[in-house]
Length: 238
Image 1 (spheres, rainbow, N blue to C red):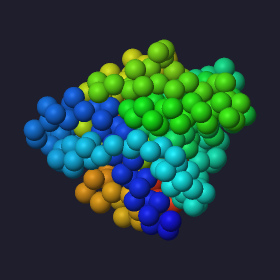
Image 2 (tube, rainbow, N blue to C red):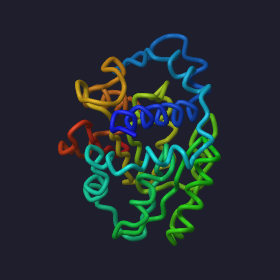
Image 3 (cartoon, rainbow, N blue to C red):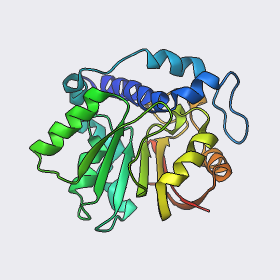
């Protein structure tokens, strides 16, 4: 499978994951989102929701292909998050565990909640964690109205998915209650004009994302600029 095929499958997987998590909001969204951002892709999200990713073994070959590491730079992203022992992380849109496993194996060894809407993906993550001896990974079945986290976490990580969430201000306002005081929300998503990922009209500038998240009760805490294709923004609740 070529690098281009990997990116196409990854983008499709990303689309269904959080689009389905926020499906209830999408069904209500008859107009583009008002405010700082521009949603405007409701119909595309609903069409992606019709595609199921039930064959986790098949998709793992593309989602976890080493070619992705060249532009996703997962180890450097995790280092920048500076997690501490005893902390917990929610990897929302975990898929086959690309970030989940790396987070669990990092020096801080945090508890990692792998959150996904697709049961087969969660089962894959469970089996993967067992095979790799990662007792600090907990698979969480997301519902249409939210991620179903069992407890507040120190960090929520959302990679390559922000642009697929409808009703973002509402979604992140609710999500704020699942983040501990002084906890953080990290957003990694495609930069305008960068190769791969969705069309440019579905991408956002850092100012647009910060504007929406400010409306949801967050303030920008850090910004990292080392990713070749993506923005990397870290927020805290006001």
